[in-house]
Amino acid sequence: MQSKTPIDWSLYVVTDAGLSRGRSHLAVIEAAIAGGATVVQYREKAASTRQMIAEAQVLRELTRRAGVPLIVNDRLDVALAIDADGVHVGQDDMPAAVARRLIGPDKLLGVSAANLAEAMQAVQNGADYLGVGPVFATPTKPDAAPPIGMEGLREICRHVPLPVVAIGGINATNAAAAIAAGAQGIAVVSAVVAAEDVVAAARQLRALVAAARQRA
Amino acid sequence: MQSKTPIDWSLYVVTDAGLSRGRSHLAVIEAAIAGGATVVQYREKAASTRQMIAEAQVLRELTRRAGVPLIVNDRLDVALAIDADGVHVGQDDMPAAVARRLIGPDKLLGVSAANLAEAMQAVQNGADYLGVGPVFATPTKPDAAPPIGMEGLREICRHVPLPVVAIGGINATNAAAAIAAGAQGIAVVSAVVAAEDVVAAARQLRALVAAARQRA
Ligand code: NI
Image 1 (cartoon, each protein chain N blue to C red):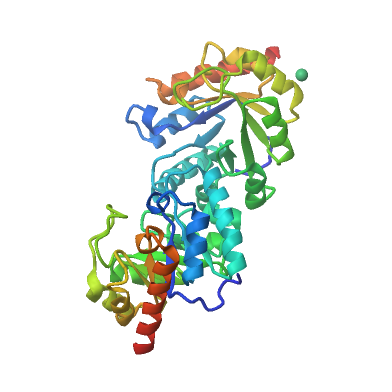
Image 2 (image 1 turned 45 degrees about the horizontal axis):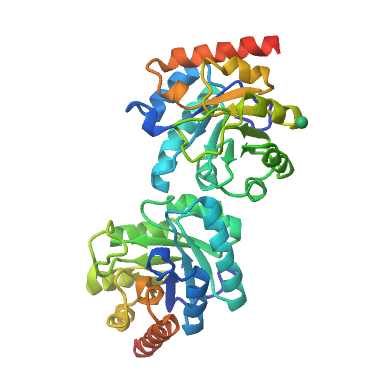
C-alpha cells in the first residue's frame, strides 16, 4: 500500500478482540474486507508488545494483499515494526506533532478530535485525517468524551480541511446521516466486528455510505 | 549523552511508580543519581502513552544534565519520542532484531535474558548489553522466569561477549557476589526506589560494586 495515495475512507473498521465473539482478528478482518471495508485499524490496549506485533503482522499481510491501508492505534512502535500505513493517536496518546516527526511525511497520521479546538490543533500538528466523535455514546469506550451528535460532527466537518471519519455509535441507522453531515466515511467497531455475519454487516454499511455520498 | 561511548553499568536503577512511596520519579531518580546511579531505566506498564512520554521527558532532562544514560523499557515509541539513549526489551516485548532495525546502530539496545540460549540469541540480534536474571525471586515481577542463582549468572557471563547487568532480587547483601560472578553492574528496582533514604541506598550499592570490581 503506497501511503498518501488518495484513500477511500468510506468504511473504516477498527479491531476489538473483546467484541469479536471469539473469532480471530484475521477471520473478522478478512470478512470485513470481503464486505467492503476500505481502511483497517488495529486497536489493542491490553496485550504485550510482542503479541501486538504478531497480531498486527497477520493483518499487515492480509491488508497488503487486499490493497487496504492498515493503521495502528496509539502504538507507533507497533506501527513501525510491521510497516503499517499509518498510526492513529488520541488525546491520551503520543502528541500528534511528535508522531508526525517520528513517522515522517509519508505515513498516514490520524488524530481523534472531540471538538473543534482539538480538530484545528490536529490540522496544525500534521494530521492526514481526523476521527471525529464520539458522535453518539458507545459502550466500547466508556471513558470517551461527551457525544457531539450529528450537529457537532457537521460543525467540525464544515471547518476542517481534512477528511473526517465519524466515530462513536455509528451503525446502519445513522451512517447515511454521518455522510450527509460532511464525513468522508464512518469508523465502526461493534457494528462490524461484533456482527454475526461480518461480510453482510460491512456490505450494508459500505452501500449506505456509497448511496449517501451520491446524494451529498 | 552520546550513545555507544563506554557506559558505566555499575548501578542501573529502574523506576517503579508503585514502589516509590508516593515520591515522584523526578525526586527518586534525582536522589539515585546523587547517590551514584550510573544508568537509569524508565519502566512503566500501566499509564497512557501521553503520560509515559511526559514522565520520561522529565527524566530525559534530568539525566541529560547529569550525563547519565536513560533507557526506556519496552516502549520504543516512548524512547523515540523523548530521544532516550536506548531501549530495553524483554522476551514479551518487541523482538530485539526489530528494535535494533528501528532504533538504528547508535542507540543502546538492552535485552533481558533468563538463560544462555536467550543470551546468545540477544547477542545475534544486536544487543549492546544484557539484563540477566532473575538472579533471585522478586516480588516486583511475579511473572518472571525461574531464578537462575549466582551460578546461572556466572555461566552466562562466562559465555557472553557483552556487558551483563545482573537483575532480580539484587541488593546490598548480594551485589558484590553478582560482580564476582562476572556482571559489569547490578540493576535494581526496590533496593533503591523503595528505600527510605534513596541517596544512601544508591551510595552503598555503588560502593559495593566498586569494591567488588577492584577485587574481580
Ligand atoms: Ni558453560
